[in-house]
Image: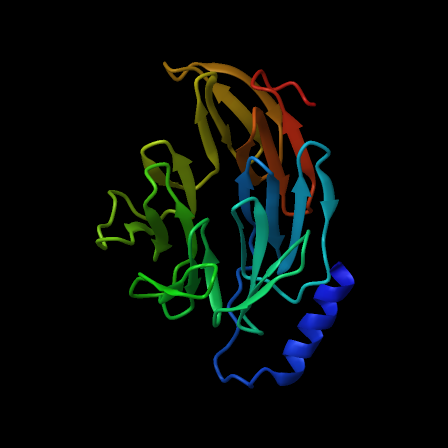
Length: 240
């Protein structure tokens, strides 16, 4: 199936119009988590690891800007071709324009306009999103110049200088590190550890871990770092 995808992308490259704007995919790590698994992009290379095996697959996709899960399918945005493509399963390609960020519901272009995964126009923002996330409240949020902005009304959440968006049941939260809140505690990547704290903020456990991204896949805490190493933990931080 990936052979079919590669052939399709080569065909698109051959007929894609030249562009004058510079490509701006982030060299940093971006990741997306769902019940199906984890997808990520680092230095433009998009990969996916599905539960429960978490076997890593990095298909032959041109340099990607971002990844997301939509209806159980992992997608990557390829700005140079102006498309989004599936990372595994049945090959699919949708022409969307120059991609800057993906959420579970929308594809945001470099000029802030947006479409859904069928290519239908949707509400966007003014500016180039550095990240996008569909919150637990079902609303769309983007990271713009270090601020968290709700797409529906342009409202900026309190705070600034954020670099990541963390999912919350009531929306999203801006931060400098990945964090997950579940009944068993709050889990956070600090840069050198994965920590677990209780509701009172008391440290209940930690394990060494490099900088990366953290999310939930089913009942598991899953992390990925810039080297593409995927680690799976139980809520008590026992490695699976």
